Length: 185
Length: 185
DNA sequence: GAGGTCATGTAACGAGTTACATGATTAA
DNA sequence: TTAATCATGTAACTCGTTACATGACCTC
Image 1 (tube, rainbow over the protein chains, first blue to last red):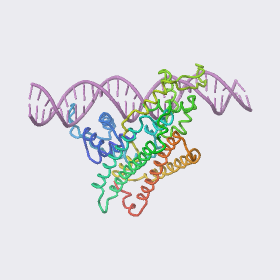
Image 2 (cartoon, rainbow over the protein chains, first blue to last red):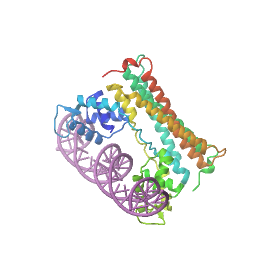
Image 3 (spheres, each protein chain N blue to C red):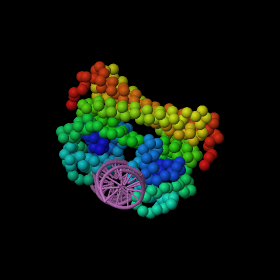
Image 4 (cartoon, rainbow over the protein chains, first blue to last red):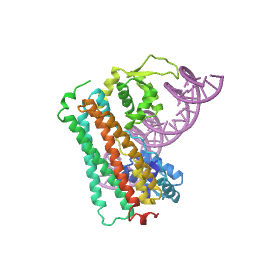
């Protein structure tokens, strides 16, 4: 039940069309709640039907831009949702699962994958710190900016953690004492 | 495409029935790949039909225990999968999304939720460190144990990160300078 | 034989993914 | 007028969740 609220948040920050939303999901919001354009269009339809948003200057034909804006009911819904308590969703991490499987069937072929992940997290960290330097350098930030900075720091902290952990994992794969466990069934 | 491989891994570690698997998913494997009993039974059926596992002592009636064991084809499939490269799945974290929404509609009601999450991560960290003390105290661990320990340390590192971040977030919510941003629309 | 628990399922739904389809606009 | 790109959608599918159903076994 989070995608509609992600969209409401994005639309409150700035009224947008489906495609613009899709692009913003690829940049900022999508860093912690990703969505494809198919999901977004489907959800925009539901939100409009539910009376939480409405289209500005409705042109009902396909292929034409439709901009949406949040209605008071939508803002109220989002306000309620912020204060809702939700059980944290269980973790599902395929890489950790594969390491566990490798402990049973052998590690062959895993090392390049660890390297790929490491490169990917380094790239993502660089992107986050670039945003931090650009957007959060103010001496006396507003409360909203402090919240957004907090969210960004979560991203930075997570990427930093994964980089450290993957470095350690690669040392285990390459380091002394690893050679004798490479082949095993 | 990870659940079948999680099950193959668990069954290689020890042949089990559906219910036993469900319990092990609640304890160890499930720490990084959760699944309900309905998913597990459904997937066991597919794996058996695909010739990757088979039931020992088949008693075809409902309500009776059925133990499964991995066939050579299943082990081969898992070995292949370990070496497969997979694009990392995009992040979806509802708590971060709610902080972002709170920057737009106000923070009312979020603090108790942060406290709940903090308590939850502390509990999970304690569980992980207990497992570490119990299972990974050996002076000269095998290669498999080193891999499993690596996986556990990822869990420990993630929980540690979240505890630090949530502590910082709560300080932002409670600390000096927070009071004047509490009410805002 | 009634109730509890162990054990295996079914059904309906919702969320997310993948592949494809269609219309509008613009520039060569 | 053709091609590229902008923009909005449809359809089919997989995976995960929630609620419920059914049978076997054990104990009182």
